Image (cartoon, rainbow, N blue to C red):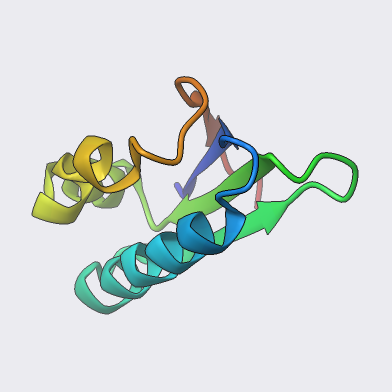
Length: 97
């Protein structure tokens, strides 16, 4: 069964360009190195420039587990801490297909 993840992020005001550039690099790594990823995209709120949602979908729970064990995932705190205004809010979802 496919597994989804929604990660809601709030960044500090004025760091959008740097955050988005860092996320694009991270996204490219995820897409190129994780064959179990179905979708991995960043979305910015239309009403709050500091609010982002990462929408993720994986082939199955094993692919999500693999994602969480990768060096690039383990480096998230170092990669994104300068941009973040607080901790992410993460929800795991079961896909209905």
